[in-house]
Image: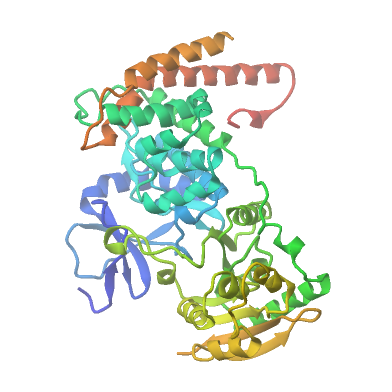
Length: 461
Length: 76
């Protein structure tokens, strides 16, 4: 081991072709000797260049390996850094659909260059500058005529199953990806989908019959009849999957949160003043990465994005996140990454040893967190003591822009209408006292025409 | 109508082939995924050939009729 600290990254230990490790804060991917032929084919055939040009694969540079860990090493790659790792269960419908289309687009291009995708895991896709990119450079194998698609099952479980469940049953079923790390089992998907999906050829074959075939042949070995799939048939399979995914769409119906800005008691002037205050605080802080907590459709995230700051816009409402994502795509806004996160139950560390997929806190801290019009939902809507909210926020950010919404505000009154007021400490001074052990208050400004205040705070060491 | 009859016939055939006879405690779903692809290979290949053929006809006709719709082909 070299003097520099070097760690294998959890989540990249299953593939014998190589793994990801970090050295002094930089991520590298080792290509093992057993994968050398496929790696050379990827690079020499022109497939790598084509995929990077089409913004489908993360770019990398090959570097000299200075560590003493020489066993099995063929190459060491330094991929372009991904600002924030997100997971499929945090994506909205549109993001999962775009990731599925990217995966199939990569498979189609790979076949043109004599290769196939051997993995179609949704975790291999990350959103970089607004585009879904494959980050696992070692996902390709040489194509052998006659072989079925080895990643077919994985594609259906990771993409087609959740997308059809989100469309035909309920968009919140995308959360099932959190409990089923290798994608939603097809027999479960088939039993949940409505009968009308049997009338769709792509869903009949790729979900319902696929599920039954898995059960029927579960105890049988693959046997020798493996060369039964012509190149044209494989292209037909990918084409069918592509048509199936393209046809899936989700119509946003009523969403309380997506209409939030229309229903708040903010006057236009107060909203503009709040925007200006947020912009001023951001200009003071100059963060590189902002987490906008409870971002709704991303109105305030865009203030940060317009300053060239990469901004992760969290909200627990899939409709608000979908609207935000569509808006980003429409305006080619590459700085905002909208994600579905419930702050009262944020993504935990899951998978092998709880470490295969990182918790939200493990992916921080952000340079700056914004918690605008959020505190009353946490403190009054969810009974969370102010001190606990402060402690959580301290664990995820170095600086904080937070809005305090007092009890007399009509939004808080709405929350209190159907319940007893058991929050005597929920006052401006109680708020400041609770945050004082975790943050120093740098600036405070009232928002005119409302009783709300905006704070800029710095995390205490 | 004819298309629907062909579809129902094909679908019924594949359903009969893949209908589970019994479930197993130790499941290896990959085998079933492989076998399904091979079972469907002929159908998928034929449908894909037809699709390409139809695209070419459409492309030829639109060129013949003077409608330059270059980007129509490959759109889906």
